Structure formats: structure tokens, C-alpha cells
Amino acid sequence: MRRAVDDSGLSRRSICKAVRLDEGYFSRFMGGKGGLGAAYMDALADLLRLAIVPSGKSRKRLRLSEQVRQVVADSGFTRNAIHRLTGVSHETLTAFLARKTGLRTAKLDDLADFFQLDIVRTGKPPTIPRGKPGRPRKTT
Image (cartoon, rainbow, N blue to C red; front, side):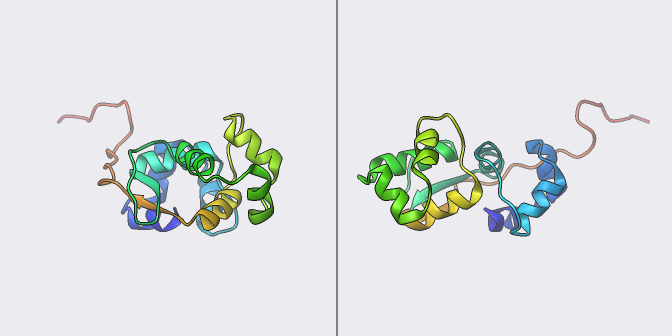
């Protein structure tokens, strides 16, 4: 995700404004010193037009968190086995799969490593209009 942000050509400030994310929080995430919740990961994926797909396969575009849920559900592993193999707690997996909570970035990374998931761009990222939103430009 961090590489996709850097490769997007968009400024970090404009990304924060577009997804309504605190710049300090985002800076810590980009520096590898913090994580983002599933809602922010989904918003970033939508903005940058990213999708998680198993390596070598393409899928219909779903929200990032839904794609992870689908991979976990389709894996054939029990939640207990995923817990033992990834370190993601059984309670966290249960709440995430039931759509009650999101996943922190570290846990998402653990699942992505285990299931060999990659984030790929599925289209060109949108351009963010310049200027203040909602205000017409001055005409002289």
C-alpha cells in the first residue's frame, strides 16, 4: 500500500484530504511506524484504484476488506488454524469476518503474507482537483 501511495504521483496532503485522514497519522503509517484501520485502507484503495488479488489471478473489484474476507473464507483453513499460523487472534478474525470490526495494518500484513496476497492497481488513479472544494474560481 505504501508503494502504491508513493507511485500514485499524488501528494500525501491531497490524499489525506481526499480520504479525510489526519496527516500526522498518515505520515506515521507511511514511515512504517503505525498502521491504518480497514476503513482508511478501503478509502485509500478506492482512491488509488487498488485491489488485492491472489498472486497471478484477477478478480472482480470488491472493497479491500471484502477481498480479504473472501480469501480467508475460501481458504479452507479454520479460524483457529489461521490464528496458529499467522498470530492473528481468533477473536480478531471472528469479529473481522462478521463485519463487526476492521483489521489493523499489521494484522492485514500477516494475513497477506500467509495467503500470498498482492495489491495491484486496477486502473489509473483519479486526479484531485486543485483549489478549495466547493468554491468557484474567481473570474477577472
